[in-house]
Amino acid sequence: MHGGGRLAKSSRLSGIQSDLKAVAVAAVALLRHRMARRNRPQPRPTKRLARPEPQHGVIAVLEKYTPRRIGVFATALILLGSAGLGIVKGGHVDEFVQGVDDARNAVANIAGFRIERVALSGRKQLTQDEILAIGGVTGRSSLLFLDAAAVRDKLKANPWIADATVLKFYPSELQIDIVERTAFARWQLDGRTSVIAEDGAVLEPYVARRFLSLPLVVGSGAGSRAKDFLALLGRYPQIQSQTRAVALVGERRWNVWLTNGLVIRLPEHEVGNSLAMLSKLDQDDKLFSRDITAIDMRLPDRLTVRLSDNAAKAREEQFSKDKKSKKKAGDA
Image (tube, rainbow, N blue to C red; front, side):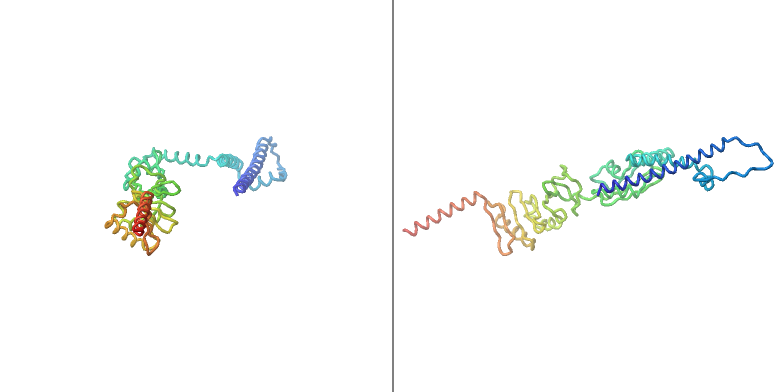
């Protein structure tokens, strides 16, 4: 597919070069013909003028139907076309456009349209230098040629910026008002953790120190669904205060990991009822402080707990002792 694009582009360039060469040959022939006529010695005037000999071929057609000095214009056109073709083939289009832009901005700045003051409001996480860099506003930019709509589009393309307003006040003041998104949670997927907004949009592909206190959500689809679940979890502070992370399993249901390592497997439906039951059990019976590693609530009619290895071993030993005691009592 890419090879076909390169072949098509190459054939177009070859066609352009062929057309330019044809025009160049015709223009040079016309120039030579006119120079030859201009340098030809003039015959002495006679009473009877001789009829000019008819011209034939390409030269005659060009001589008859083209305006004067067309050769000069054709030559200039060829030179400009060759320069443009060289810029395109050499991959210097961006540099050329940037050079033209810098030149016109320099003229505008000299004329008094330099940006001398930037009024910026609404920023919290981003610095002024970062916002100006995102918008493409540099020290060479002039207010006269600054495209406010383009700057706004660049700002809104940044994940941190939800909306932006850009206003120009001539001759030298630029005003930028932005609405930043709020960092909502840390999202872990495939071993990578990023900072996300409430709608799940990734704000930063890494977690800075100032975001370590944000809730941790794990799993595919968890970023966009974390807002509703965390809001529900917030109704039960008995559980929320001990929560270390929440994980979306199979994009269907949630697991809650507590700070002591206990994992709570919640059902797909009636999640609020399950959380209310857990909160009451912990408040009345200190459920989360017991020697257990997991609480399974996926089945609607029962709650299952998994003991830790030490607790399971102690339970087996106690069961064996009780069995022996019953046996002895029976023998007696």
